[in-house]
Image (tube, rainbow, N blue to C red):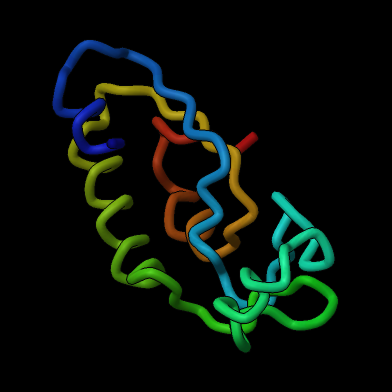
Length: 104
């Protein structure tokens, strides 16, 4: 969806909320693992620790490659101002020198 929005060239400013990208050792801030139904917990397996931290760096093909792709998009389309709400420290580090990106 982000790619389509950027390529539409309709927007000068884009707010991206909740782009956590499932970073290892980060809290799952949408839900506590205690809130999951039993069948959902079985699907998660060892992806989360008992205290709700991400146990693996890549889930659903998200991780380092996706961060690189997002960085590529933000650099290439630097005529757009981006505000990002995320707890992904790697993404924040990768974007720290981009003047068109602000983490809030």
